Image (cartoon, rainbow, N blue to C red):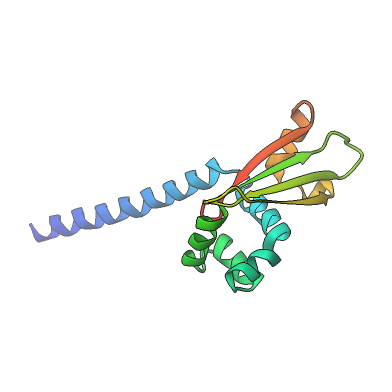
Amino acid sequence: MRGTHMFVLLSVAVLAVVAGAVWWLLGRAARPGAEETGRLVLRAFGRDWAKRFGRAEDELSAAFFAGADAELARRVEAEVGVVDLRFDGRNPSADVSVAIVVRYAGDDRRSTAYLTLPWDDVPRSVRAGLLGGDPGVVFRKWRAAA
């Protein structure tokens, strides 16, 4: 009887680990390019946010992309709200223009930054949209704690 209980407990534990891994993988697949997009947002607003939150840019990066500081990511999420990105690649022989608009939570303030990216720096999922879409404009959203 004792062996049966151990087998059941071990089976439940293994199932929980497998289910957690599948959930994590599905979450990553559901947000293609989320990390690449987030890195562009941080490239545009990292210095401003570092001052605003009293942290270094590399600490923000670690919080968003390595899970190093979940509390910092939540603080940024609470204040920053949603970030909209507009990738304009209508001219295939030129770089891609990116407009990044931060809508701060709790008020109507917005900040906009503009980047110009060589094709190789454009997130893979966005490149696919630019190549297949008409008129060559792709929109994405990003959240700090997403």
